[in-house]
Amino acid sequence: MGGVTGRLVDKVALVTGAGQGIGAGIAAALAKEGAAVALAGRTVAKVEAKAAALSALGLRVIALQADVSVRVDVDRMVAETVAAFGRLDALVNNAQDSTRKRLVDITDEDVDLAWRTGPLASLHCMQAALPHLRETRGCIVNLGSSTAITGDATFGSYAMAKEAIRALTRVAATEWGPDGIRVNTICPAAFSESAKEWSEEHPDAFAKVLKNIPLRRMGDPEVDIGRAVVALVSDDLGYLTASTLVLEGGRITLG
Image (cartoon, rainbow, N blue to C red):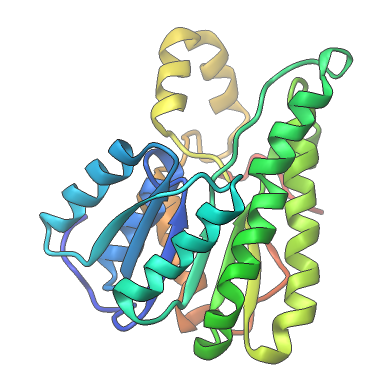
């Protein structure tokens, strides 16, 4: 995919965890629809590389260093986005860190890591963005996970964090809806860099995963996940809020 289609021209988006994987795919999809996009990440080299590639296509992007678990970084990240582009229409809370362990082995430090980089960071980003989103009647897209919905083994601290984010989404949609701000969650599964590495290291296990997906493939970070975020940010889904959109090729449903 290349070139600007103009669907999101005049909109400004901020994407956290945009240096790789799903975050990078979302940022690319938004930029290719004409949005000005701030790519934020803890490792500045990663977001700078992704931003450079998009900039080479003539797209409006900037790279920002930010550790979302640090409140001062969050406030600066939002301020720098607005300073660069003059407004903020969409916030995508994608960044998250965690460990994978059986419940019996999870430590307080594991829970604290998932909490600080997930729901607490998302709350801080939302609070910092709120004054600007009120002005634009903008939207927020938070990242959840199907592992929390299905209760996948070894995802205990991660699942706790992701379900907290879904709850945060619903409360924000209720409180901020009168300001015209829409807040939704997506639960994606995509063939990111880490997923590719895992599939190469564990081909048999990956084949079993694909068998449980009716569409028989993992999603593409930009085309399948990013384009869905484009729809959420656009006016096409302007009446959708407080909802969870599961983008996993039919592996699960919420029913």
